[in-house]
Image (spheres, rainbow, N blue to C red):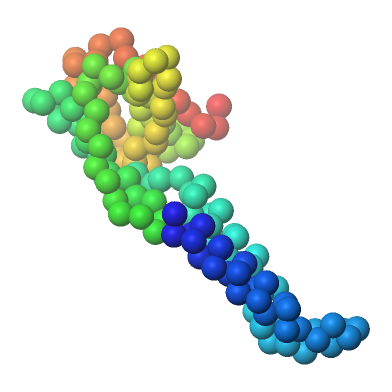
Length: 156
């Protein structure tokens, strides 16, 4: 709501300023207000588009085996972080992802059933040591059974 109010205020100010502008050919380029408008408007629009379209980054996650929950914290630019809890029953699949076949580190790709036939996918971690990935996959197989799928290697 605030960006709309600011845009409306800017348009009203622009209309009032244009009424007092000297309209002789090319004399309007001498007004610094016009330069601010010409350079500021695209920057404002670009900032609003970036703010609305930026995707969240997952900064932390944990599998709670005793509570059968996945907790993750996601952050977006210019917004507060939020922690989300997903029950194991809503996890459609989990797989380890490795950038290359000979990688020493990797991460998890988790698909979540959001209900109504909608699924979401997210990447959890990217620099987890291979031994730790294998450990997690072993006990996740015990809890999630067929929902743990084979490892994905990005270079193949």
